Amino acid sequence: MPVLVHSEKEDVALELLSKARQLWSDDILGVVPLHDAKVRAGGYFGFGADVVYAVSPSPSGASQCARALHQIIEGEGFDLVLVGSTRPGKEVSSRLAQRIGCACITDAIDLRVEGRQVLADRYALAGNTVATELVLSDRGVISILPHSFQKVESPREGRVVDFRADVGEERAKVVERREKVSEDVMIEDADIIVGVGKGFARREDLEMAFELARALGGEVGCTRPLAVDYGWLSENRGIGLSSKRVSPKLYIAIGVSGQIQHTVGVMRSKTIMAINRDGEAPIFAIADYGIVGDLYRLVPHLTESVRKLMSGE
Amino acid sequence: MHIVAAVKEAVDVDHIKIDSATLEPVLHLAPLQIEELSRNALEAAIQLREGNGGKVTALSFSRETIRKTIKEALAMGADEGVIVTSEMEPGPDVTARVLGAVLRGMEFDLLILGEGSADNYSCQVGPRLGEMLDMPLATYVREIEVADNGLMCVRDMEECREAVLLPTPSIITVTNEINEPRLPSLPAILKASKKPLREIRLSELGIPEESLRPTVEVRSNKAPVIDRKRVVFEGELDEVVSEMASAIAREVAR
Image 1 (cartoon, rainbow over the protein chains, first blue to last red):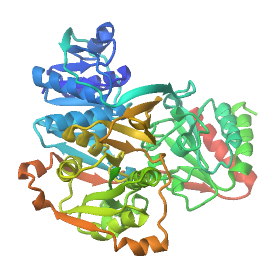
Image 2 (tube, each protein chain N blue to C red; image 1 turned 60 degrees about the vertical axis):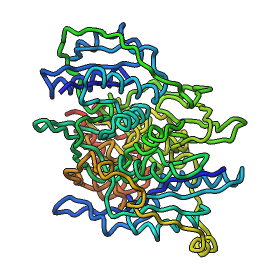
Image 3 (tube, each protein chain N blue to C red; image 1 turned 180 degrees about the vertical axis):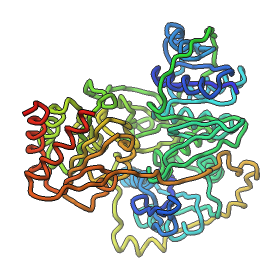
Image 4 (cartoon, one colour; image 1 turned 90 degrees about the horizontal axis):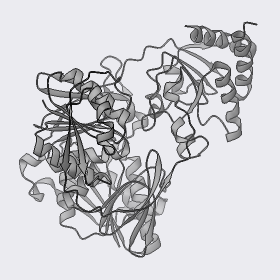
C-alpha cells in the first residue's frame, strides 16, 4: 500500500522510512518534511523514499500541517500515514485522522503487517501493558515514538514534487517562542546510565550521581519530575513514557522508586541495578541487582570502589 | 465565561494488578476515579472561574458508573455535570464524536481537556474536537492567563515553550504541570450531590450508527514479561558496596 511519512524531525522521518521500506518493499513511499524538502531530498531517497513533497506555503503549526497532509493523501492516493510521535506529531496525527475520518494510533513502538492489515503495538494503562491494535478503517494514521526503528539505507531513484497546499489560517497565534535550555547530551547514546529520582533531597546532591557516571564513562538520566517539575536537570535527560526511552548496557537507578511511567523507558536496558531505601519499591522488581539502603551513604562508597576496580587497583 | 472541562473516568493506573498467568490486567479490581489529567483540566477551569467569574461544566462520556464518579468533579468545584452514558468501551475517535455532539448543542467560551488521559494517553480527543468543531486549539498548555483579546497560553513542547494567543471560543489541552488539583473539603463533598447533573443517553444524541463504530480494534493487551535476576545484596555496607561494584565492573567489561 502507498505509505506517506511525516516528521518535523529528519532523523525520525528516516527511521519511519526505513521501517516502511522493510514492510512494503515494492510500494510507493512518500515523505513530507516541514523544512528544506529540496535540499534534504537526497537523504530521504537514500532511506527508501520515492517521492519527497515540497509543500508551499510551508505549513506553520499542526492545523496547517494536517491540512497539507490531507490534501497530499487525497491528491496522490496514500492509504497509510506514519508520523513521528512528538508532541506536534501527535497533534498532527489526530487532526489528520479526524479530517480523513479514519483510525489513529498514537505513540506506537512497533509496526507489523498481516496481509493487508496493519497492526501497531503501544503502551497502555500508563505503561503497565503493551496493547496490540489493528487498524479497521480503509486508511490509517499511526504516530510512532522516536528511536523505535533502526535507520537502514535502501537507495531509490526518487523525485521531488512541488505541492501547493491550501493550509488555511492559523487562529492560535504564536507570539513568542523560547528555546529550552538544554544541555548538549544524548543519553540515548550512552552505554551506561545512572538514573536519579526523588530519593535525592537537593539538587546539589545529584553531584554524587554525576561522579559515579563519570567514573563509569556514562551519563546521568532522571525521572520526569526531576526535569519537568523541579527543573534540576534539563529535559533531555528525562527518561520514561513521556520522555526518552533508553537501552543502555547498564542502567543504575538511584533513589528511583520505579513508577511504571519511568520504568517503561529503561526496560530495554541489558542490566538494571537499583539503590533505594525502600525495599518494597517497585524498582527492585525490575532490577537484576539491588541494594536496600541510604543512597547518601552508599553512592560515595560505590563510586570509590568502582574507581578502584576500573583502574585495576 | 462558560468553561467546559471534559473529564474521563478511568481506573487508577497506580493500582493495576496483573494476572500472573495470563499477563492481562485485572481491571475490575482497580478503583475508578476521575483520572489525573482530567483533574488538571478541571482545576484549570475552576481557577479561571475563580479569577474571572462564570460557570464550569464537567462533561463526561462514560459507563453508568460515572453517575457516582462525576461527584468528584462536582465536589472539586464544577457548578454542574453533564454525562453521556453507554456501556460501550469507546476509543478516542468515538469519544470525540460523542463529546462533539453534546458540545454542538452547548454555548461555551472554552473547553479544557487533559493533553491525554492517564490510562490510555492517546492525546487524540482534544485535537479531534478542534477539527470537528472547527475551533482554535492550543495543546500541551501549562499556563493560562486571561488577556484583553483572548487567552494567553504557554505551550510546553519538547524543545521550546511557546506563548500562544488564543481567541475564544476555543479548546485547550493541559499538561499535568499546569496545577496541583485540589482535594475537595468534606462540606464540598456533601454539597456535590445537590448540584445539577444532567444525564443524556447516547441514543438521544442522534449520532449515526456508523460514526460510533470503532476504527481500531485492540487485539491484545498484556503486561510485558519481566525476566530479571532480582538479586538484592545483603550485609554490611562495605560488603554490599563491594558486591555491587564487582557486578558493575563485570557488566561494563562485557
